[in-house]
Image (cartoon, rainbow, N blue to C red; front, side):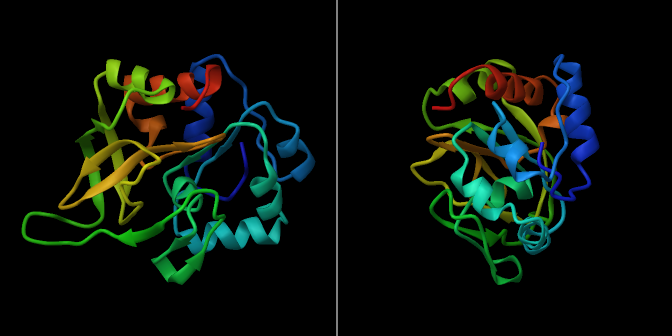
Length: 196
């Protein structure tokens, strides 16, 4: 697990421990580069996460990573090229811009709470999530677009990507550590199998 300073590090670690995995929390590029699987948690803003990754000299290490990488919440958002939040250049591992969710009558931002996932197509990463019930817990104001890399999407006034994957890079906008069986299924699938 990359120590990007997110407030969800402890809860993601505990969720992994419940699955029998003891993650190593690190800021060491060599450790990250040699890992079998890497998780990038994030809570806060894309700008703060990217600032910390730059300060720790981890941006290129994450871009060069060959092992499967899972971004969680803001950790997923920084996998994209750019975030509208504080006009932030991100890792560029996935194509697209993260934009602010639009508030409207009956649609509050931030989007907080449980929401149903809609699955775009069968995939190794998302199939177990669908079988586990397909409802996940979200807390966010910004979201990635529904694109060719989207395995599952959600709707909160507008459609947005909830699970994405391309090559060795994957992300979950929702909090798997707070999403009960669905979150456990996502983490288990990430740890055990291919992403696509």
